[in-house]
Length: 176
Image (cartoon, rainbow, N blue to C red; front, side):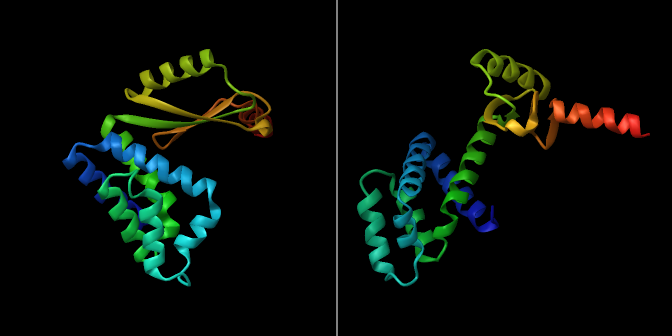
């Protein structure tokens, strides 16, 4: 994530707080993110310096003009006009991070060998919230190379309960 994308996100977040429409901005950014993800050719159009700026601006107005708050549209136009369209995804991620921090939430990246059940997710979330004294949002992914167990990365810490890690620890003890 670049400093530029963080600065755009901070500016938009401050405006959303001032205007009292953070939830509306969050929904608008979800729409932008979804539109860009589903239309790679549209992303290419916004990023292309070969397309006249006015055409790219008109494209933004048509795609989002009636669907997002003016502050979001203005920011999108500014990023595209300044050649920062490639950083739109990073800006949206940075905005989400700011919103979570504002709400006192943290994201826990959870990697497991198999998909966790809803009960397992709820129990893990509860334990993490108690450990870190914060509301946690779990982002769960499956990585079959773990063999078994889970690995959690949050708040700059790694909690590695994977079978792979336990085997590595046993190996280190045996080697010493």
